[in-house]
Length: 435
Image 1 (cartoon, helix red, strand yellow):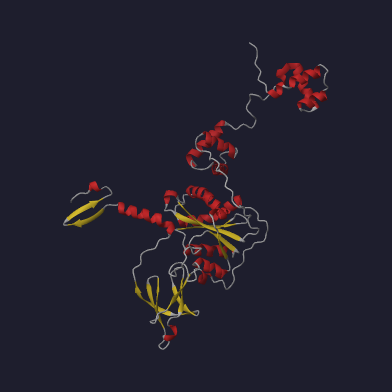
Image 2: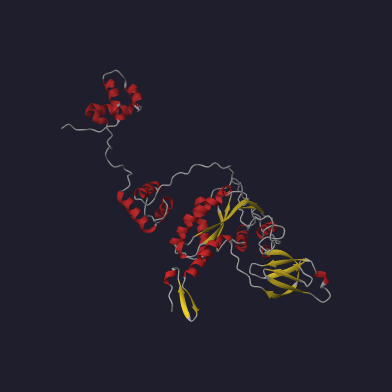
């Protein structure tokens, strides 16, 4: 039985050229130029052909595993680790974790291929490209800070859903501040922005969405809400007093940097919290400084300019007097006013009652709940003479959570007495019984 030799087309095409050289029709130099090798290597090929024939031109490594081939057992071991610890991790994050623990040494793309082959990872189809107007990033750190809140199940089923407030620099992509809060409220943004300012100073501008915390979205401002009588939100007023411009974006794509950061955080941060067993906002906020440092080391870029545009806080920037709720109320003839369903009676010395009738007083509510009433920058004494019951007002972004709480509460067995008997009502009406 004749021996079968597997050769490539490239190797077979060299045979006629070498034959012509052996017959004297071509020189070694001409033969080397025809097959695209050096003259020295052509001599080697010619000598192998003379000694072994055409099979001498075959590459010696054909059929053998490559010198850099990854051991199949190492790949299978990596897949077993992922199935045990990182089952819902993407290839990039899973590769990072395995490299950190020195459990693999091969590339991310090799791991991606093995995860696809094992059915752990499904390749995502490329979305059809959408064209948006390109906006170049700012040149200096602190020129423009993109701000957004991201409601998500950050602690998965270990805790209630909450929101993450994200502050990211437009020039560098650095996470400047992160904080877990129950929901996006004016008070939450006040507290987070205060911490940002104490850490970095005042940026030139904040780039936000059209959330009601940042922008009045109704034609007529309601002075009893988080807006003042001039149609400016409390947060907008605070930024104006600090000299920080507030810029609302028209579309989510316009503030793409923070939107992309939210997607990355909803993947990476959730898994980091799980690996560390963190199950509360308090513990999560303590960990965030470490996460920010590692995130910035990996993903931030150098700005075009090394100048930091942040401005230091001035002596006149008294944050306690800025990050509070300020609203205007007109005093009645009896020197009373309404604020948050409470009646406030202003107390003055006898004979001065007429001077304060129908004047506009400023009501200041501190974050901790203390209320101050001022007229011409002077504090007025007052007493609360009536408290009316008030329904709790929920932020629009936590309505779903409140509805779920009501459903769970109503799903419990309700018991009451009727005509000396007891009815038990559950979700299914056919199981009602007479006691």
